[in-house]
Image (cartoon, rainbow, N blue to C red):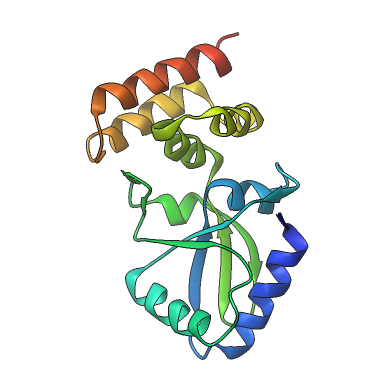
Length: 169
């Protein structure tokens, strides 16, 4: 398990070896850990631009990999393509010399977890529900579902479950 302090210390070491600024957006459980909504995460999930991903991967090759790290690019996370503003609405966690670390907005974490919707995803969504408005979630979902790479009917069904379980008052 990886806590916020371990993750920030590791990124600070990476930051020392960078020569250009990159924006890293934490997604999934990593974002929740950085937002203080989970005590730790089992792996590290980041989203970067394609150019920043290549730069970051070069750094990772030169060091021992501490954890399982998944890198996503340009807002395409798991099987969803997030709207272009995902970086703008992400919360800035820390600005280092070369790394700007952000956490995906809770609404986008819910959107990305809706595709798989396993028991762990449901626990995470329960923790996120207080930070997301139902109307905004359904509106954002309609933008994302158009580019979903899986079965749209299943994705829509998962959203219905989420709305009933976590957004009904």
